[in-house]
Length: 149
Image (tube, rainbow, N blue to C red; front, side, top):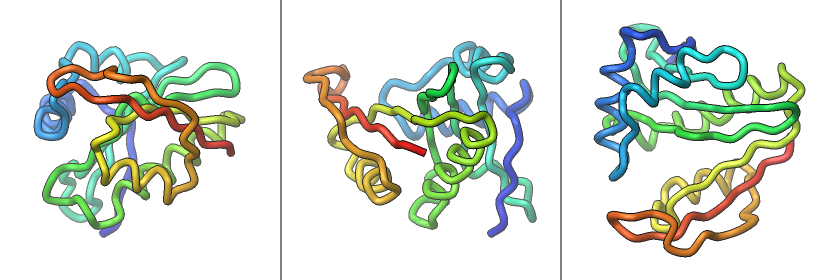
């Protein structure tokens, strides 16, 4: 599958939100997603689409300032998981950051999200901390990761 990346537009938000609801116990609202999509100076919301079908397969939200960035969200549509798209999204984030001379990427993830934790470690993120009981419903720790470019 060839994937195209493009900045999210207002008409993408419903579809992104559907993936958000299916992916996370505490999904972002459409308004929160739009806050990332509409801010071109320190935030971005990027869609990943299958080039052939045009179907949205995943997305990420990133905020950045000076030489640091934070991945706020990264998600792949359920039927496309375990096909390397998470790694592809991370590669796209790394490229986005390199173009802007960003040196460090941060993120946090639920400790029980084993697939995501494995992806980040395999990609080269280092675990740098833990926030006990950070998440609610269900209660879970947040693992803090850092990636140096």
